[in-house]
Image (cartoon, rainbow, N blue to C red):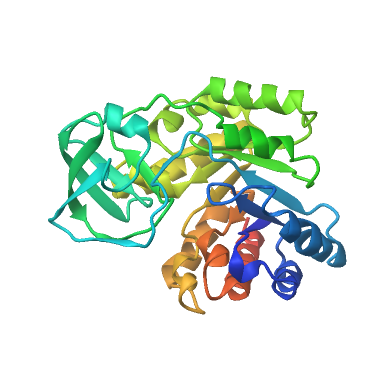
Length: 327
């Protein structure tokens, strides 16, 4: 079983990484939606890899989570409070968003923001701006994810920043690539061809299933990926949330039948971003995920921005270890 943390300020210190490795962490994820590999050079070369060597983890993993075709809010000078029932502008003169959303969003469609924490409904459209009603409000921060529900947008598999980051992957000892929003076999072919050109054939490809399109093409995605990643954040935003457990179970079952390793990620211990002890539901979720056959478990905000990264990893490892005894 592999146990992954997501790098961020709380665990970007040598003493914290030492403790995470001691507890049982086997690798880390670097979320490139908010940074670049070059910017993380000091953290990787002076902190992460020395900590791995000190812990005797010669096989420690470094996972790059690419930007891919994911759509995000642009940079905001400060958080924007979105009040339920009020209208806001997306685009020119308002919240900066990618041009492709302005081109494709239609009146009546809903836009999920920040993995569904915020929800908007398009009321009017133009070439430069969308007028939207806030259905589910809260604070909006820079670079949060965007998704137009019930819509498939034609975005490139790899961005220019993805290509730049991949060109540095060998230098920094990258072992795995998390490919976001995989839509079908061709996305994997594009990534594999790029890795081959860069001499990175040995790097493992983890295909993230994050929307209905990826789920519908799961069989062909399993053929082209080394591992499947059930990424419940955006996956849960692309469908009614009560359908997510069944989809997760089905993906897990099909991976077991094909003997395809799979990783589970998103909100495993979400409450521990603010609390030192998880909920009963969270530890049951982890336990059942191991019984369902997960080969790896990944923490995100719990270690990237949470207050209790070491404690969160401890609960993850201990709970999964108990479940392994029952398999």
